Length: 589
Image 1 (cartoon, one colour):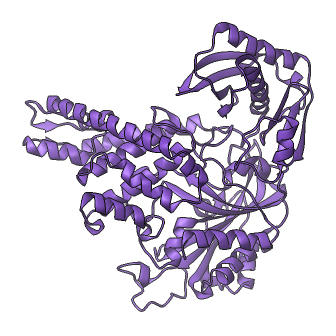
Image 2: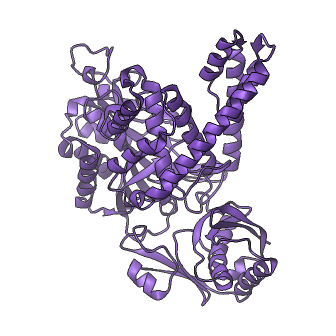
Image 3: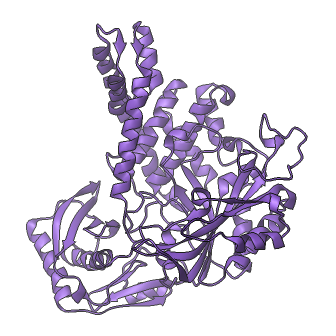
């Protein structure tokens, strides 16, 4: 079974169960600083999981493109991927554990034809705050799972949320497939039979799906209260499922990666079997980079741009190990063939390839500078200390393998343990900084976030009035302290223009305009004059928010009821974001 077949079967099955297909959202989260990228299918749905009405109803299904960056350094093994697709179905206060678990089981066994005897499940074992999820376990028993195939695990394994400090959360129940000897060398199961007891420590058991059961709401005091709206959120990784169901132990041999590996072998003249780690990293990182650039990000020194730059440069480094130079374009071309069902990839192909080529050339120049710097560090030295080695890695992207090779040529040694210590210290600092930076957002739906989000609507309209109708929103990011709004414009705004925009926004606030919403089709929204990007982004129904006679825009974020709640708006900074895109940072007083 290939990825397209799996996705089609999944969407069609849940449509039969009354679910409405929703569109695959951008990798760049809208108005939400909790994460840099869309990390799961539920991420774009957080406002609706918290009670807001979804235009498409209470039963939803889709496949969502995702990026996860927490373990980039792990990419290179058989299963870690930066970019992946997630199957998802949701019940927003509509159906509960019994239906959710039965849907998952029926899809896997009847639609995909998986043998019941190769399946096992895990449920939440409970703790001092929340009771054991015996309810889910009983449903699995009714479906034929005995106690040997049901494991009870703690929060790390079987709990989700909340997305912010407070909000919906609950236990989850995961389903595992026994891949066995056919997919795993050195399997403890030489006979090929499935063990009677489910052992979570046995790598032959692979998780292929997870039902999150949002039973509780965590309040500001840390209490877990029964939720008024109980939600279901199923997630299943397409890559993991395709790999497992095709009896493969290596995800890079599945059809969503194999053509990339074949191209790297062709260009390098080397075999995958002898160069697995480097070829996996190149294939994974280039694929992720193509999708990130397609959603409007370019390489840079902060946030998403920094992650993109890191992925590209790591691919270039490993390409160099295989003797490859100026090769990214050729490998990236394969991604467009594999994912020809993503129309926005083809539409942005020229830009994507240009950005990859530009960043590759820039890094190749940096490599040369790095080698000159290495020569300075190594001059008259008998040993390169860990900090110097790490600075070469951090500043010039030199992997430790390259530093060791250069040092060997000069007959000197490198303090590898010192390098590892500095690297770990840097990773911890980065993680701490990231956690602090992205600790709040729409998931918390606080008053300040709601006020600032509403202000972006006024700002968008004011910018178009002052700078012209060619201005379009290119992204936004909101924290409880400030709003950040990106828009299409090719020059710096004058002080007079900024003042006019501020005056228009504050004029709308002072008029105490009501904020209302209604649902309609994208066609009706466009006809009504609502701002929005009309194309593949929207489904059959959208929410349109109107602010008096000042602003009308398609949106899913939180809003105040009247502009009198906003206070005074001020532009703190106006700067360049990227080519042809400006950025405003603003606050409410």
